[in-house]
Amino acid sequence: MIEIGSRARRQPPPPRVVFEALIQPDRDPARPWLNLRDGERRPRVIESDEPSLVVWSTLWPTLPGAQIRFELSAHEHETLLRWTLLTPAPLDDPGLVGALRKRMNVMVNAHLRSTFGQ
Image (cartoon, rainbow, N blue to C red; front, side):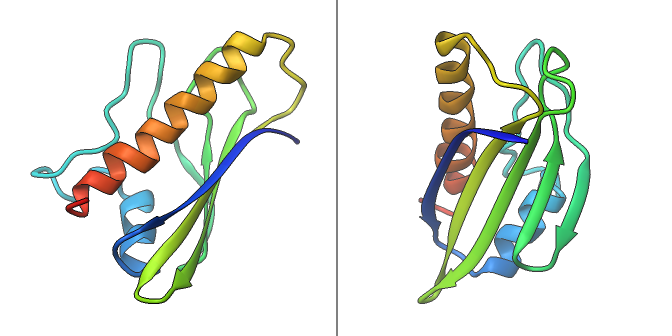
């Protein structure tokens, strides 16, 4: 797999809470964060190791085989959450790569983070 993007930021709750949010994105209907856009589909959890790792299948049907890897580690009383976007082949379109990176960053570091009151 080829890494096309990655970013790490802190999330306010401890790793077990962030892990649960990634495993079950719709667990709290009052605080949705996985808002799919046209052309996206709900990912499947294809690997997990509580509370430090979650791997999703692709969000994008046009990128079969892509994966999103989430690595969680404790950082004081918070979680350091790193997302990494992996594809089975290189992407030759810099605009697409940039759009995918931005989408992941907004989804994780804005939408998910906001459900924790940040």
